[in-house]
Amino acid sequence: MTDLEYDVMDELYFVTPFNQLRSTLELEEQELRNILQSLLQKNWIKCYVDHTEEILPHEVDFTHHYQEYFYLATKEGLLAHNGR
Image (cartoon, rainbow, N blue to C red; front, top):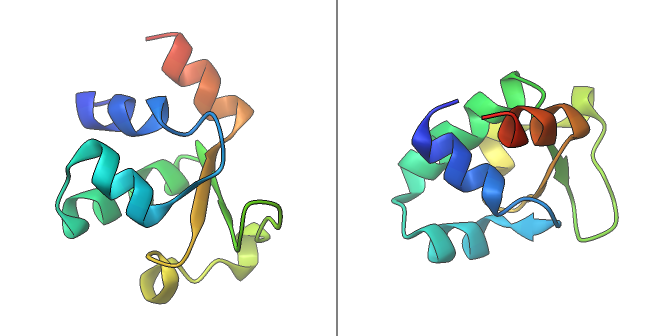
């Protein structure tokens, strides 16, 4: 886990929208997108339509909707984050 992945995971103990992550972490949009995509590929995060509705993994259209999604760390992601 990179330092930036660690910082992003640190913010995902609760469902968090993309723009809030970007603002809190003070990252450029593309940089945050790349980190989230990496975390998603590792199954360390899940995507949500809003604060309560999870998107099934096969329905996630990250390329086109990453800015609209909310994000949450998975159990696997939390274990990786806390084990660092």
